Image 1: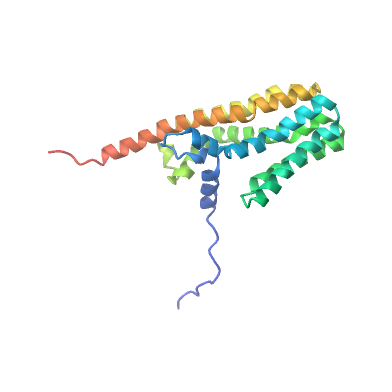
Image 2: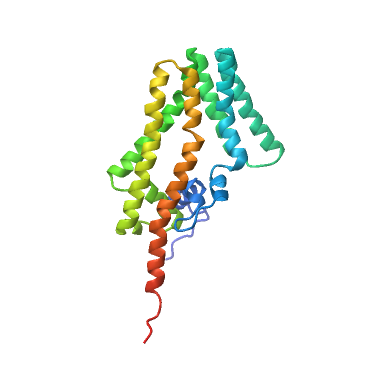
Length: 245
């Protein structure tokens, strides 16, 4: 007797969900083995609008706080700017999820600072995010599954085969260590300023270590990954050529 066929749709494969997320990430904007371009880098950062939406709230906090030294306008004006970005995207019928995420981030930061009455607490959520990424990267290195290699394998749908290639493992490890360095640098530089109550210096440092450092490291990562993945593609194509008698 045959088994009854369920009318329920199959549950989405977890691996496929992770692969889709990897391809949407900054690292997934250039497939391993491909040559990175300036336009790809810009797209990975959300385009010009994405960069503006990322930088302007923090810049608004810095400017307002430097002028007024008042907590309330310093955290509410950036929140208002983030809300305007969402409204503009909705009005233009453009994707708005990233803008909403920005509003949530700015809102949580502003709410924490307003609750404690300390303007420097506006940066605490950022510390937690950086610490979380740093910890995830370190754990991936400790278990010998460097996260950059995992993302590259999801983008190329090659599964765990990359771990049998020493060049790929080495490159993925180096790239993962570099990202660890980025998040560690942010924490090591910004936390002393936080504990010293140097709010304006903290806001300035956060801007400097934000988009510029992210863009530079993303480009370096693309170049590193390309060396190993394109080498393997060349080896495979060479091996598939027919022998000449």
